Image (cartoon, rainbow, N blue to C red; front, side, top):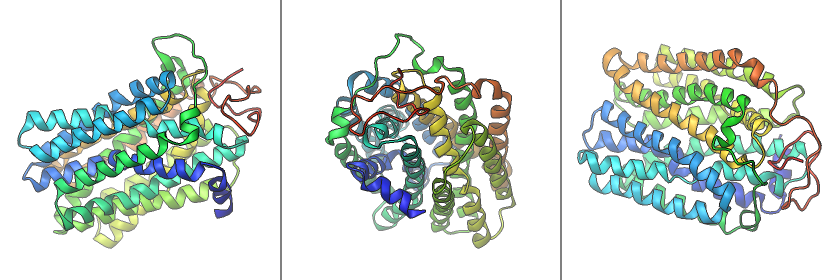
Length: 419
């Protein structure tokens, strides 16, 4: 299992790009947690905390595809680093003004979300220029998903540690300062500076003109909604049990489960169409969310959270392959950014819905939102089977990437540069 990942990390630039991207995404990966904890610590209600997190998520949703398109057109360094700096300043405004100065708080989270750099999509656009061969690139996608879960495991613990050592405001500031350093590490690397997108057909819809991509985005809206609702539901569960640390353990367990699932998934080669495999994985993901509504004791709930996370990273890794198969030429960063965006919109809606659900029906209702959302994601994939099963880019030989030192990409894998 580890040998395949070590092979990827030994490739030139791979470890640096992965580490820099993860560090650069730390503010975005922990923002909902940090905003909720900060708002609650300042005396704000669950509804206010969920609303601010939702505003951040919606702003990220708007910004990601726009910045992703800018990256495809202008290159990575000109977009990623300035965006990271501006995003950090927006979160600093929230930390300094507090949630009770509502206009300033809203401006802060809007700016922070709108300018979140599309590092995630940028990394997936870079993998074909760093690695040779379809299997290695697909394994890098799986490793990418696993590494994200390391961030989602460590991130909540880091936020809660900073909160306990200093304050929620300090946590916001430190996390975003670290994120800027991560973005800087990526954009000064040789692959990031050299990367250029393929020529794209002028079309105002960009990546969204692909029916298969639209179907995938519809499903991942509900996956994001499930995770967003869990963010708020876990805070409510921790409050019910009188210990703030319980929240960090639940979120870390969710990430740990995904890490384990992703590691196992990426260790083997999968046969068959990824679209069909994705439907199966989402079904298992939905099944894992349903037991959370039982809300047992802390030890059992932590185990259920880990179980609920097991199929998240495999689902994400498989979705990356599907995105690449369906993205129109010259829109690879934008297409991946749309996936991040849709996920973010779903998470924002989930946090907004879960807050009132806690106050109206208790903690179980907010976890029920997650279970229902997982089922809805599966329904979307089943309903759009015809569109998803016809890749936008069929199995053809792909022209050598202008930045690929390893030669032509193997037939059947598209790097965003179609012949």
